[in-house]
Image (tube, rainbow, N blue to C red):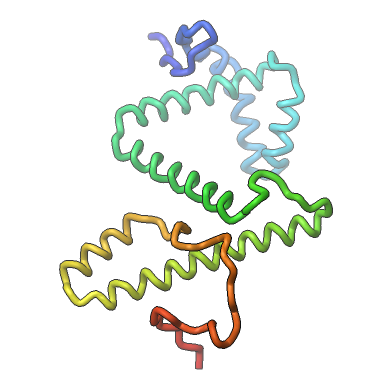
Length: 201
């Protein structure tokens, strides 16, 4: 019986078979490698750094690659066959992309690189970026948690809760990131009636 096909195409576009003969011949070496990692005799990082320094023709390197192709093939076949898995992966990818867009939106004027030369200044800039994002997300949570409470119609409240559950609090289109902000006592007030958390007794 032939080994399962990989779904990794070569440069010529021809599908190749997994080299199960290589896996059988070096199976004991592969198990020793796994046991070394499990017993914490050395770290996985050190082992794979050493393997990467070897020639691509090293037998253990090729064995790990062939064994990984089996796992990858099963995953791709499952991905093709399982609609829920595809939807879950797509949902997570959308979240990552949304988070990246959020970061770019907050980092006004320096989207892809730090303008600061010193490492300490770069850390401060990154911390400020993170603080602004967390403030916006916190505000979104506070606002969204209060909106259903203020909705009197039961059906509208249920629809609103369902909508909130299926969407991310990472949103910033309602925030003027290029505006001027006044934090004076006169302006700093609860203008939309968000109920603040009670302080601990």
